[in-house]
Each structure stands twice: as C-alpha cells, then as structure tokens.
Length: 95
Image (cartoon, rainbow, N blue to C red):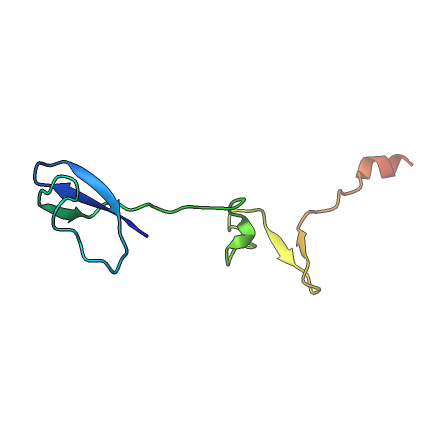
C-alpha cells in the first residue's frame, strides 16, 4: 500500500497508508481538521544488485574514436598496427 502525505489546516503534515482505490481523506483522523493531499517527491530510484557493467549496454563493446587505431583482419580479429623493428644497417655491415 502506498503512503500518502496530508496537510492539516494549521499547516502540520502527517502520513497515512491507504489503498490506491480508497478516496482521499477530507478530515484528519486524529484532530478532525480539514486536510488536503500533498503531492510529494516520491521515493526515487532504487538500484539493487552488484552494479552496472559495460556489457549491460547495447554499445558496451564499442571503443571510442579516440583510442589508438586498430584494423580488423579478414578473420574478424583486431590487430594493432605496429611496425616490426628494422634491422640496424650498421651492425649488418660489420659482420
């Protein structure tokens, strides 16, 4: 059952649990003063569980544009473009 907040004529407030199907109160059950229902901010969002992960989102596997360039090979794997170290010409000349 939801909890509703009411404000009395004198400005004080109280909360009461009511069924959604019940009509709003017109008088305070304890003091007999006229009351009106106050719309409150609500309960907010409640997150339960271990948390959120990158894989929870539709595009979680994508990398941003600012990452180092990587190209996809024919078999679908990604390979970083790095050049193999070139042989030092001076060492080869001495041999």
